[in-house]
Image (cartoon, rainbow, N blue to C red; front, side):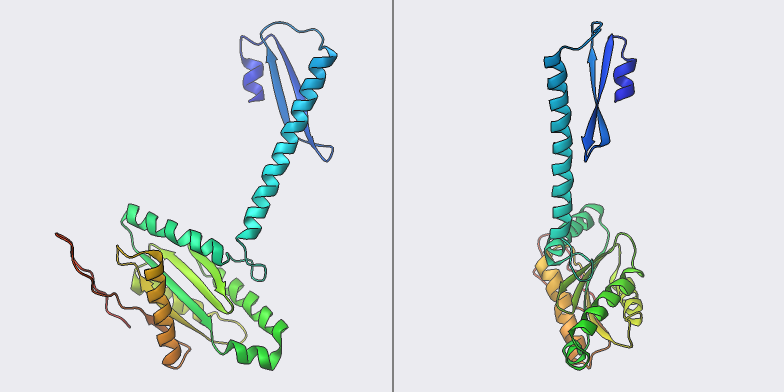
Length: 241
């Protein structure tokens, strides 16, 4: 931008006013005149300094708001997305899957016997386990995958481009990475192309409870429910596991 202003044939004079934050230059305010200016008047110099100061303050406010926005969507303990961020991300992933025509799977993971772990080893050990699990699982995911701490010892996972079979295999890989000799249970559901975020997550959650009731330390795939067909629409069914 500064180079463009200086290279403009109509520009006869230029001024570069530094934009400071904490007395350190972070940007440059470029001003150009179409007529030669030998010297600035005090009033013009004061206005330009004021503009540069306002620009610095605006940049600082924008960065502060960005940091606050990130904090509001981040789980303090694990550094993952929190429930609020998840509730915003899942509808976006569904919209993207609908637009692209690709598969989307969702999983719910829950650390087994976490209350007993806390009771026996203390809440600090429980916090360490949550952080270690989040780190271990994140390291085995793709950049496009969305892992969030849903609440307590429960985590939600969105897997764009993953069919049910691929998602089941990926979640098994995550379960194998659960740290500290602990285990976790998981439920996985693949989007049917028409259900909303709550329906899809609900099927994954019911599959998780099936895994818990079946003895824990396993992954269960959620069944698609048959629904009335609209004219010309086929009902897709996926076998549960």
